[in-house]
Amino acid sequence: MDLNKVISDHLARGEKGALATITEKVGAAPGDEGARMFVTSEGRVYGTIGGGLLEAGVWRAAIDAIATGRHRMLRFRMDGKGVGDEDMVCGGSVSLFIEPIDERQGELYDAIRNVIKRDAKGLIVTRYTDSTLSKSLLHSDGTVAGDPLDHTVVARLSVHAERPVLEDGLIAVPILTRSRLYIFGAGHVSQYISRIADMTHFDVTVIDDRADYCNEVRFPEAKEVIVEAFDTVFEHLPFYGSDYVVIVTRGHKHDALVLGHVLKRPTRYLGMIGSTRKTKMIFSHLKAKGFDERLLTQVYAPIGLDIGSETPQEIAVSIVAELIKVRREPEARREPSAARPDGPEGRSHHSPDHHKILFG
Picture 1 (cartoon, rainbow, N blue to C red):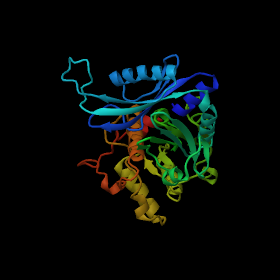
Picture 2 (picture 1 turned 90 degrees about the vertical axis):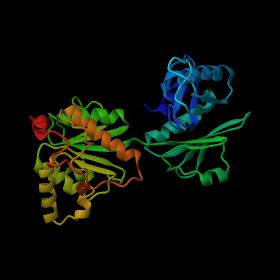
Picture 3 (picture 1 turned 60 degrees about the vertical axis):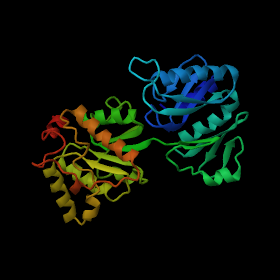
Picture 4 (picture 1 turned 90 degrees about the horizontal axis):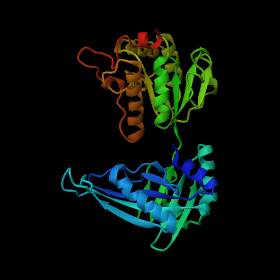
């Protein structure tokens, strides 16, 4: 769910609401800094700031902000003394900014929606004092929509930031495009990967040369399904270095072919399903064709986090979990395949019969 789109849709219908943003979190507390929740004038809630009593208290404050048109800062302390205490018992504290959203921001959220449609980047900048409130959109080219921004503010904000900028009197929330995920192979595991990846904010493209497998009926959530031979589809697939690639084709020959093509292109993540024996076989084949071993060590193989998965659903969970792990740790060192042990007997992270599970 894109909260900016939700807000834009409500404003287009002439409806009001209030937006709550966590600006500070100290100690153990629900929700992360930058988490947002939108409350409509009818009391419906979109997004989350952690749930429970915190959201209940913020919901009441949001309804009040809608009625009065006034913004405010709130601080919640989670210092209840026991399980039977009606107060929150996490032990930390959370500060939130609550602002009314109405027709005055209609054009601004239209501009935000256009940024999202173009898969562009930007920052939604909110500045406030006790008595004033302004809201702006800082485009990636430095231009500003909505309320004017001082050039000093523009100069120190990065529109390429992936985390919110939270300062006293200023909240800057990045517009992040959904991560592009290419799934090569349209078998049973691919169906579950596609579903879970879509739910976790990936734009999914499924590629296979079999129309009876690769179609919108089997992959209704995918942004695109492409029926084409694996050796020709790369002629028109864009790669920008931020792309995620999962190779789960129906056979070793196709896996090796796809892996060879992807290794020539920049990616954020590249994983291939299969046992340790199969991985070594494919790597040896590619090294014999001249591929640098340093490139091969960047391949996540065996693919997925080791959770002992066996069924297609479990395998898909382990794979998407690894995608999320990589996305959440942009500066973390990627573990090369040689440093990803499979246990004392060299087992795969998945059932040794996973191809049988995938393709029958």
